[in-house]
Length: 247
Length: 247
Image (cartoon, rainbow over all chains, first blue to last red):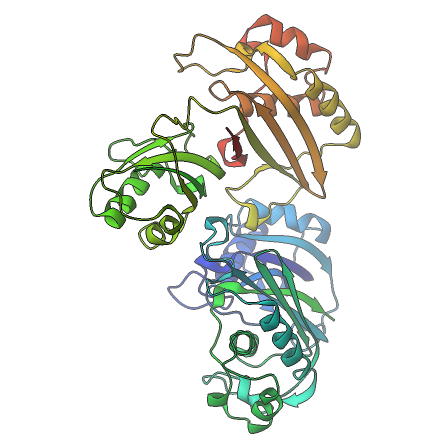
């Protein structure tokens, strides 16, 4: 039996999604919980890798289980008692054998949360990027102007960290929105796929635009340069959430 | 110099507000941070005691400091670098020597957060009471009916845990509201003061009303009985927030 499932996790105490020997990972904890729920090993395939400290509001995956006897709608409850408190599986359905949770993704949405205030909020620790320097209304306007330049099918290699073996660096960014709600700035980015650290470098670059270190007009040039050193800093992992996966 | 200040903390990793030898407490961490910021010991007096695991969105206190040389408006920033991530001091002003942060309280508001859904939310762990059994609309209606009975100046000893040396058990509850926003139920209670565990026992009782184990009509009798055994269970600490203090 093959299940399509959705999970949610607080990434703070995980070394990312993918199993790594000796480290606490989301996949590792899932494997163990499914093992206990089914009584034998299952194969978990994720929609994406996420880095250490990155969170997921919705991360999709498949569970392949020989002789799985748990009905899909009962899987969330069946596995809940074996999962740690920072991880839940909240949805499952049966799926076709040829469905692939990574290759079949049409679009993913990431959310990046920035808390912009002089004094930290203890309830947001590890859940947002804390920026004490104020982003003004003008800064926000510049960010919005810069954001438009990312839309479209472009080579985003200037916004990719080293350490990835990807050769095709063209991605189609379909939406990039910036919302300010009090002290919280929410940046949402949708694309057909993302390069390594792409969202975090885009967010880092947008904040440098806010602070006037990069001009909105430069963004198109930076993209065209395919030169990582021209883009801004990589924003920290703790503000990043995989938010939605569309098939 | 005497400062009036407001702090905010995630209670999960604290053994409550008040200093206890050998345990991590809010007051203990504050003392240490103020010590470092001022270069000598200060005296911290809180508006209330909170139990282990209880949070505060707004907790008020005074800081007394001989020869304090930090202007009040600079205190939050000055102390921030010495405070741990689960605690912040976000407001300070100078106050009169005879102001007392506990005796001068006119009203306090507590917030209690319940997450009511079959599968746990990892982002709410330690920050709400997770109730998997659904509270129906009828249950919510019963809770609201019961809530009205708590309003007014009454002897609340049926809603007090043992282990307190309070002799006057009359308190004036001025407001009790229940709001459901999706899976989240927020209960807010305001009073001129609260007995030991009073909010948690009221919330526990209200959920038993929701589930039909106590009828709304019984609440007045239970209050009048002054008998703790007739009220409901004590709801867990992790859902409770000191939310507002009025002077």
